Image (cartoon, rainbow, N blue to C red):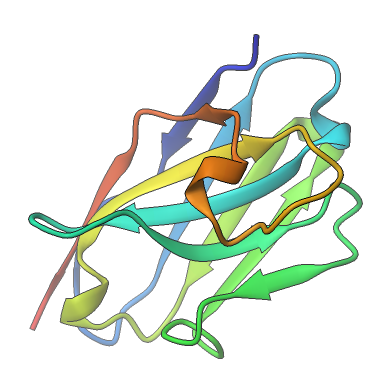
Length: 125
């Protein structure tokens, strides 16, 4: 069983920055691909970013490319999402997720096996 706990959300003005963290339990964190998703009220959960188990491959949604950066620290069992130049449309609950499979599409929510409880990000315009 993997437990994921997000932190770092909050209220920020448009143009500002936040860094989200996701701490994972378990000794095999370095084997998981990790992803960030978000969900705004009345919308479906959407892919934001993903990082491969080694950190060598990074994936981003077009809407956040150039503004968000995903990274991981396997020694700390933690994955990060640095969010810069935030916009009002980035407002959502952000979830991290763990993918235990070596194959599949990392941008698809069903690919992931474990999810955190989410952290709220609100960007005021």
